[in-house]
Image 1: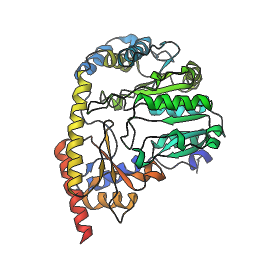
Image 2: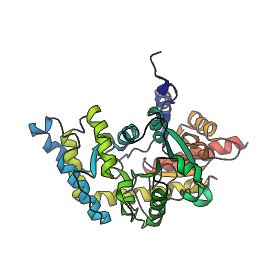
Image 3: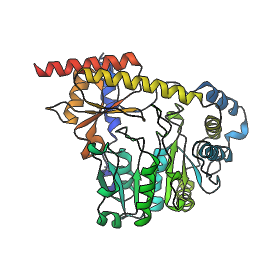
Image 4: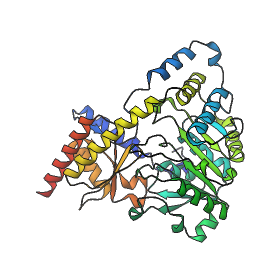
Length: 390
């Protein structure tokens, strides 16, 4: 088989296997409710769609983008940080356009780390942190996130030996998969830790604007420390329902971004210009769509939390992200429970083990279907549990 040793050591992405089975069951006539992947189910706001349509009429936009992304988009990201966080960034050196934050994370490891280097990653955490490291020949040290600490990483749980070994620390809040949230004090403490051990502190902020219950998610770039060791990955996929558009950014350390730009300029030519320009409008234009979507998600979160609680599932309430992090019922592990639930009731949820060993006792529920489908899914889960008690 034509497969490198690095690829041979990487498992297929968990959602690719789930989607294959979903299609097989759907083809066989089963009504499948997909609460697996976190892809917004509402359309991209009309004003953003209109903008990309307008830009498609300009033939100049069919040329290659500048490698670092067009100035209009990078300036819009800078305006976003000034508006939301009172942080001033240089669009030329401190912002880089990405083809989705997942792509940016994947290219980042070989850009700043050498084979054999070590990065600290959360457990449970977004699976591409681990796989991106593996593909770059980088080692990972998983930091278990404790339920007793609301799944918030505590730098005190990182041993001095691990801290001295590592070159970078990745954090993610609001968190995927747990929905955990933090305040600016968390980033201040993490930044001080990074400075003490000469680490690059990387914040995956994909859900930064997906917030409710009066919560405001901070940016790591607000931390009062040397920005040279701070980097944040931001995305328009969730808040603006632009997942398939594949547009995001990295912001912060000019030195780290210069290295990332070298990798990207040799492997891609940034995103299609009309998409960048529509994304610029998304960040600088009417923001009521973000508020409306968050209100919808909050309502869904409450509905699903109450429905799951009624059928005996313990759920962690969240103030951000698209997910509910739920306890696997007694007598099951996360893999067997989620597989049986799909096969017997046609409900897809994600096993906690997909996010790391610490996630084994949990499963993730995505809030990206309408309320009546969430309630139907909870009803099916309740019936599943009842049948397995008998």
